[in-house]
Amino acid sequence: MKPINARLLLVIGLAVAVLGWFATVLTSRYSMATPVLPATALMTMGVIVALTLVLGIRVLRWRNSTKKKTMLNPILAARTLVLAQACAYAGTVLLGWHAGIFLDQLRVWSLRSDQGVTWLALAMAGGGLIMIVVGLLVERFCRVPPEDGDAGAGNGIPGRGSRSETKGEGEYAYRGD
Image (tube, rainbow, N blue to C red; front, side, top):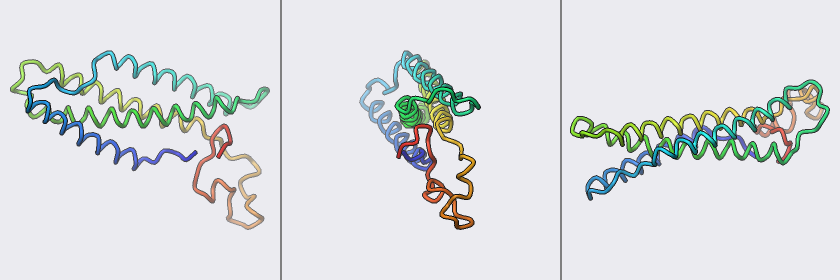
């Protein structure tokens, strides 16, 4: 698997922010409800973040332990990595969408008597940001540090690294490609 590209996350976030802003403009024009997630979604986001962190810490403990009596289940490590990346991408979409809504709501801040939707959009954007941070952090937990023999073992040629260094991709705890 390839590591998450930060530029791709930024592009996705900006594109979804524009869509969120446009959707809010349209719903306001037609006197519809603002398209923001309900407050209960914050609890769901919290459960996802907690589960991702617990699984990531489990992989990190195995990676950092000096006595590896048992082998880490490679399926668990792969699923943890996929969950971390999905958490980062979902957080990007949630952050972008609700940031677009928040920016549109700011323009009518003083005209509205009920700013509950604005605060809810800001809370959802904050939750999306937390999901991104946790996803990227757990993705780093899943990386395998280079082994002692990998440092200069690139075909006997000085300056050539291992296979993963020459490709520019990181290796993960489950050692799968």
